Structures are given as structure tokens and as C-alpha cells.
Length: 400
View 1 (cartoon, rainbow, N blue to C red):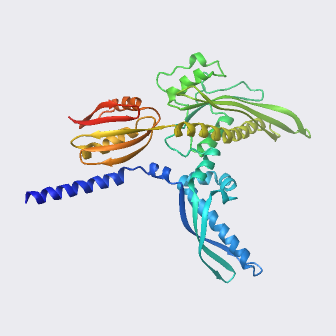
View 2 (tube, rainbow, N blue to C red; view 1 turned 135 degrees about the horizontal axis):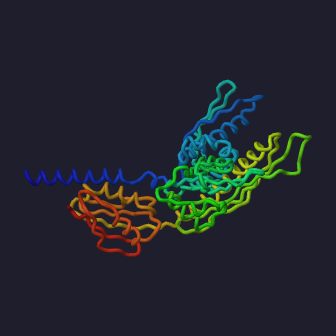
């Protein structure tokens, strides 16, 4: 009887391992490795002047647009697609050819004056991701994308105003609002500065509208930001007038973006916009707002590309884990790894009842990852990091 129980126990243990392996491969890792996806879609067109050939071509073209749309939906959230629909239409859907690997018409039919086709379409997700990154979308949620804006704004003859000035923590200028709104729609997290972090004293900088990179980085670090955008927004009257009432106004932004962890400048630009209005104050504000929207489109693209480049340079650290109760502790260990800054993805390579191997996509080396693990605490077990190599960690779970 005992041998039978032993066999049953081994079979059940193996089944648990298989289920854990299936559950612990993150969706993000799987998506990253999918470069092409195939869809079966239906395209429709009206038959005009009995021209069936033309109707067929249009129906196929419509099916390709649907396939690219579905592929984009796999990459972006619906609300991001809604907010950026016009832009997505211009860069992805007007010409689907760059994103179509191949297609095949499975079946087709006519119904009165309507032509329908069912088409199997293979779409390049990699090319869509590349294009979306190029226009400023943050696709990788592990990318550092929390941004704090330092924009000193002056509308016409007003004095320059900025939120780090005395009593101005809740000041949000027209240019800053436009920048924030557009960059949020791209997937960036724009931090609000109204409530100051405990212990942050800005009194020495209250009279400094143009912060240097170091001061801005120190403040942004207190807010937990990863990127700071620093600069000025100024509006001017131009010489253009229409009659005696309508004036013309130009808003000019000079901006630069820096990474907080390195202090590196990753983007900069000068952007202007012109408006006309009978109301000088409103005209100046609108010019600043329009310039902010235009600047956000360009900065989003440059910052996303810079951060994606950093993320793509992340290496892989292999972690070998051993212990007597791997299955009982493994899920907690994975969650702790995911919380370490710089960890992008985890993949369970192999697993048995007493050992496992993980592949960790990490921005740093094995020693730095080990230091991050040492700061983690576990209720029912501890970790003994007994060997550290260039890209390998060897760990033992220790019972408490």
C-alpha cells in the first residue's frame, strides 16, 4: 500500500509543479515574445455600378484595417486608443501595408449590393509597437515613466509664476496643463505637486524660476519621480493685427527632460504656437496651451524612445533556487522579486519540488539584484544568497 501512496504523491506533486509553471509565466513576458499575430476578420464593401472586382478590393482592404486595429488593441488600452484615435488613424490605419506580414482570403460572397470576405491576416505586432513608441506611447509598464513638471510661466506682462515659488504649490499654468494632459494620454504618469512630501523645503529656491538640473532632480526625487521636465513658457504680443480689436499672440516653450537616477538630459526642444483673439489675456493663455500640446507630442516621443532604449539594455540574471519547501514559498518569492526596482520580467525556466530556475530581466547586475533581495522580508522563510556571479544568483530558502 505504501508504494502506491508514494506514487500517487509524486504524481500529484508533478501536477502542482506543472500548474505553477503555467501560472507563473507573466503575461507581459509572453506578449513581448509574440512578434506576429494572426486574425480571422470579415471585410465588407458596397458594390457600385456592378464593379465586383473593386468591391472585393475594398472589402479586403477594410479587413486589413480591422486586423491592424485588433492588433493595436492587444497592445494599448481602450481608453488610450479613444484619446488618441485621430493620431492612430493617421499613423497606423491610413496605410496598413507596413504592418501586414501576409493575408489569405478564406471565403467570399455577395448579398444583393454588398460584398463580404473572410480574410486570415498575419499582423506584425513588433512593427506596431515600434511605430507606437516612435510617436510617444509608453508600452512597457515597467519603464520608468513618472514625470514631474517644472514650468515657469509668464503670460504677456504678468510676472513669472511657478509652483515652487512661495505660496504657489497649487499653481498649474496653461502650458503645464496642456503638457500633462497630452503626456498622460500617452501612458506617462504626470505627478501632481500641490501636496509637498514631508520634510521638503523649497524656501531657498522660491525666487528661482529657472532651476538647474541638479536642483530639479533633488526635488523630483523627493516626489518619487523618474523624469523631470524643466523650462519656461512665455507668451508675447506679435505685430500681426486685424482691425482694431483682434491681436496675435505667440507662446514659446523652452524645455529639457532629465533622468533623475543619472542626471542625464534625454530630450530638449523649443516649441512655439500662435493664436489670435480679441481678449489679450485669453489669447496669450491659448498660445501657451497650444505650444504645450505640440511640445508634449514631441517630448513624449523622445522620452519614450530614451527610456525604451534603457529598458532594452536590461540584462538577464539567472536565479537558481533550492530548498525543501520550494512550492510553499515560491509565489511569495516571485512577488518580492517583481517589486524590486529595475526588474522588468520574470520567467520560470524549470521547477521541481526542491529546486527552481528563474530568468529575471533586470536593469543591473546580479550583485545589485542580490542587494535588492536582501532588503526583502518573508514571514515563513528566509533567503540565503550563497553565490553571486556576473549574471547568476544561487539562493537557498531557509525555514524559520
